[in-house]
Every structure is written in structure tokens, then in C-alpha cells.
Image (cartoon, rainbow, N blue to C red):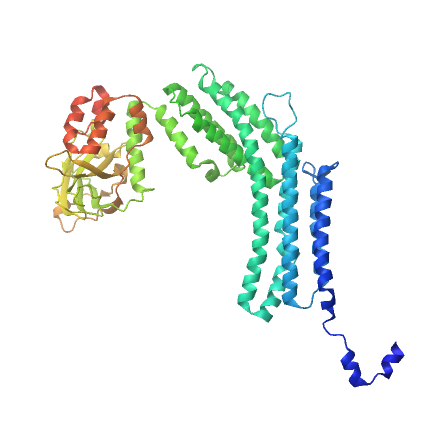
Length: 543
């Protein structure tokens, strides 16, 4: 052949040169990619359904041989692809899409088979135990699924996405390269999400079984003798948690451990939330509140466990607020109610209705100065689409201040009233400094025939009112020191956990207080007269 080649004229040699010969192998490469994927699935199926041996990776963490086999399949496919060096970049991108799709399918297949196999075998094998027991095999199964997910996440680097995308951009342009990268990542991310979903299904199933046991322990705690020692009452629950979480800690990947600890905590919080739907007595509520605080400390573990953000979920905060309310005295509830309204005014209130005012306390004159400037976007409560708003100012609790409420004139048919009304209220600073002291500015709709209607309110803690230097002559002095200018959204839903608890205690106060909110300040005098004892003096709203 070599001799023959030397006898061929040079012009003929160019015609016989092999160009684009890689195209001969296009179908063969495509078939190999699909064949490799089919073989990978067969190996995975055989490994899972057969005698799946346990492999120790570190001192405690173990995997099944099937997980390692699945990862090995991914790596073999990736190695073939990286050694192929297909010269035509557009076709290379098409092959890469096929490779990524097949690896993604194989990862889904493995985790789905593992998930189904786990369901068939059950989540634990200790049938002699009445409570759920976390086994090492359960941890291994979760490790397997997480390990395969982590290997799937490495595919962009393993298959060298970036160099291929760069070559594609040089040929087809940046827009095509960006679209190609997005398509490849979408395949990986979609499979990753599917795998996470199946892992979370297992985690949720574990949580459901643990919830049954946790609920039993909480019920026992609620129904126990009030004189019983709380630590001893919690011992069975703490032992249960320590045993199961200890197994997760000693046998799980870090990622699996973190997921499971957070799931168990969320289950505990939900069990507490469900348990207190039936109102507890004051002593029982205090005992239950103390127990959940102990568990909070246990899961935080001095900063080595869950983060404070993970622990203090909305459900946890709400549950603690309810328990705090149920375990409080009447006077404590009043204080909680006022503090919560002040908190809602300051943060977490997204109302478009605003009240604009300034406030300051003149120390040498012992005068609280408030200027109600205006309201904006106030609620339209009348049938004509307007309101006739006025603002009423009250220092609370009344038991402490014993100061008559003051109010602005009403503005007819107005949603953006301008008042510029100044108020000077004589009050001792020591009362302002006390915990729970607040100033409320409540907007009512004035009505000549029916009762005034509550539109909303802002509540500020007296401790947040600026103390102005001595020597100020107050509002009338143009050189007076600057007061705090505030623009705050109206709180329209004032049913705090504390007020709700008061209503559960069937106090006449709640009935009259709600009437005051709904129908206006003309009821304030009735509130004071209808309440009895120290409770009435603590929170009546007399004019």
C-alpha cells in the first residue's frame, strides 16, 4: 500500500485524502451512549435487588455497594466522553446533552429503586419496640441516595461543561453558548430536584412515625401531676430523642444528619402546636412552655446544632406566644398585649394606611408632647367611599397612668386628613420608663347616628420616646430640641395571642374592649364602669 501511495500523482493524493472521517462514527457513538445508559441501569437494578453489601467509607459512615456501583457507572460514561474529543463542536454539544440526560435518568432510577426498596422493607426492623427506632440500615439507605445526588451534582465539572461551551460560543456566538449552558444545567438541576424530592419523602415518612411518639410524650407531660418534677417527666422524651438522633449522628453523612435533625425539630414544634389547640390551664401551659424551651436549648447545642434561624420558625414563635399567654396572669397578659401591639406597629405591618406624628418628652417640665400631623390612605369605612376620621391618644395601662384620653377633631369625608394638632400631657417619667408602658394613637371614623368605628391604631413603647434636654419650653418654642418624627402604618388586626387568651378566660373586659375597637370611643366610659377589681383598673380606657 505504501508503494502504491508513492506512485499516485500528487494531484490525485489530495482527492483521496480522508476528510471529516469522524462522521462515519456518528451513529456508533450515539448507540454507545444509549448502550452505556442501559447497561448502567441493569447494573443498578442488579445491585439493589441482589445482596447489596455494606461498604465502610469512614470510621462510622457506610454506603451500600449499589451506591458505589451507580457512581462508578457515571464515571465510566464520563471517562469515555472526555476521551472522545469529538472535533465538531455543534455535534459535540448534541452528544453531551444525550450523555447528561442518560446520567440524570440513571440517578433518578437509582434513587427511585432505593426509595421503593426501602418502603418494601420498612423504615426499621425492630418490630418488638413500640416506638420508632432509627436503624443503621435506614441511615445507610439515606446515605446512598445522598451520595448519588452529590455525584450527580458534580457532572458539570466531570464532563467539563465550560470548555465545550466556550468552543461552542466561538463558533455559534455567545447567545447560543448561553442557551446551551442553560439547557445542560437544567437537565442536571431537574434530576437533582427529583432526587431531593424522593429523599425528602423518606425524611417526611420518618418524621411522621416520630411524630406519633413525640405526641405521646407531650400528652403525658400535659396530663401529669403539676407537682411532678419536670426534668423527670422529660427524661423519657430526651432518652428517645438521644437514642434516635445518636444513630443518625454516628451513621449518617453530614448532609443527611442536617436534614434529619431539622426535620425532627420541625416535627416536635408541630406536635406542640397541635397539643395546645385544646387550651391548657395556667400551670400546665407553664410546664409545657418550659419543656419546649429545654428542647430548644438541646437542639441549639450551644451553637453546634441547628441555627437560631432554623429553630425559631414561625410555628415555633406562635406556639411559644400562645403558651406564654396561657401561662400568664391577667396583668401579665395585658402587658404582653400592649408590647405585641407596639411590636406589630414597629415591624411586620404592611398596611398602606399611615399616621404621621411627632413625639418627645420634656424632662424638666414632665410633659409628653405629641403632635398629630396627618393621616394618609386611611380606610374608607363609610358607604360614600370616605371616612370622617379623628385620632384618640391614650397612655396605657390606665392603672399606671390614670390619665384621660385626648383626641383631635374629626375631618369630614377625608382619607388623607391634616390635623397639626398639638397635645401636652403631664406625666411622671418614672411611669414612662416602666416595662409595658405604651402610647396608643387610634383612628376612629366619627358617626353622628351610629357608634364611631375603629379604623386602626399605632402603638409605641414609651421607652422609645426621646427624652429631650432640660430647659426646653416645648411646642411653643421655635428653638425646642428636635422630637421624633414618625410615619407608622396602622394596625387593623389587634387580636394578639394575649388578647385571645383573655377572651378564653371569659372576662367582661374583652367583650367591652372589642366593642370599643369596633364601634368607637363612646364605649370607653362603659368599659371602665363594667370592669371590676384590679383587672379593670389595669386596662380601662376612660375618657
